[in-house]
Image 1 (cartoon, one colour):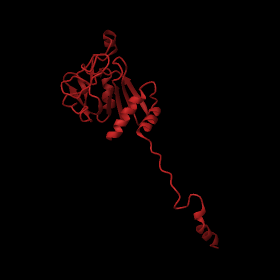
Image 2 (cartoon, rainbow, N blue to C red):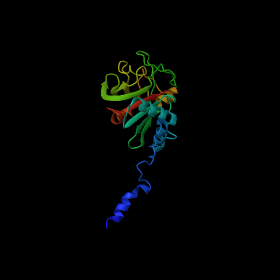
Image 3 (cartoon, helix red, strand yellow):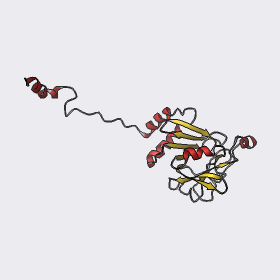
Image 4 (cartoon, rainbow, N blue to C red):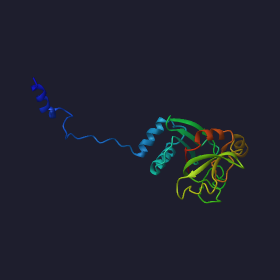
Length: 212
């Protein structure tokens, strides 16, 4: 009565997929560029943010082991009259906000063309930041601390008191009157109307990438 079972066991090595020596297909490993491109498509960012800018942010985070559910990108290759600040929810695959952001007064007028990590430069610093706690600035009111994550690129942010804050010179009225936004001393300043959203979405742990 057990003969069929014994035969099945003896000849099971002949069945497809049962050989212990059968080659196993290696797992498909995406490059960071490929992974960024797939995520860019999932986020439906075409027509909003350049893929090259998003990919640069993604690869920088991968290379430095920086993670975050919410990522903000300030694309300083755009003029200050453009809504060049993006807040992205990577978990929900959603663009949450696109709005204005100012650059440093010595980085340029309409366009930001010069960047620095040096104290007293009044220029924007590029690279990855971790958004810290909410503070109250004596000059600007509610603000967010920014911790520069890249040595030699933005590591002086805290010493320079580079923070995210609201400013009257970040507004469409200012653009109409001056042809550009006003400028900060190096802080990524946003409009006063947008600052509550920044506190809500970015405080205590979001990633900020400043591209230029």
